[in-house]
Image 1 (cartoon, rainbow, N blue to C red):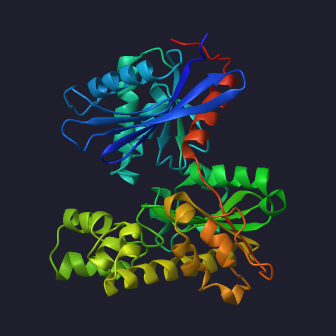
Image 2 (cartoon, helix red, strand yellow):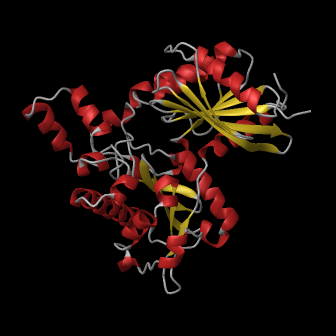
Length: 399
């Protein structure tokens, strides 16, 4: 009998990433992935598992997504040797201070997640749409939520507090941190693959189209570059990173831009795209001979290194630097550019190891270990769903 299917969902602005896992008594084992591209007309499903398939979807697009999701799941079932769906886990960007770990999605949890929408207006509504669509399609299917912010709840109030009137903190205006599912996976992988490093003072650089850094001590989050929103910290593909708030006041009052125009600029027209005027994709910039491309990447690497130094201050030193996510895992030139600014810490990179993308990248005389590790947020979502449902006595049974 084929094991049942556990699904994980990660909703983006124009895509829905779906992790496909076989769920049995040993846990969740990845057997494939799928992506629904809602930015195409008609939408397209890309499926990787036993085979690769690209399928044009015929369901009509609607805000609640249930028809597109229903058609996509039929194709997934037809291409994979698994039973029917037994559970679904979701990545939720913002859990506020309400959620310190994964939860089973019931009416109360869904209402609480929805209430956090003002803290993440661009991200929260997307995952809520998916939760409701699945509930409509499979009312009895267990669903769980895993939160990007939950991993950072181990940070102190000193780290999380803004120098603003305390009444605003009581309203939830504080530093939360994001990419927590990625950091949880990397912390776990460090314990497995480099246990001598895992319990020390480690900074992880999650570098993708969205990017941040996290300071770990004993495997727990002590500080992170992102704060109240996913705009904070280092420059990203199209996001600005940390910005003097006086710039915002200038744009709003002196330039007369609307809040909506400023928001669009900060999220979609800034970062590497804004710096270069060419592309927000670092691969394009690395391949470009334009001086603007080089200048954008130089600033990107410089700001990452500066953040490493700031986070090292929080944890009282640095014993290891870990690169992860798309850029961190696959672009040795970016890794080298960051490390070039950190020689004062005694960090030395082995050029050959870096070019080959090995696990350990530091030179033999380096005072700081340097690693590259692949992250897997979907595996964390799946594992947390299994653990949550197991505590309730749920078994991996197809529905």
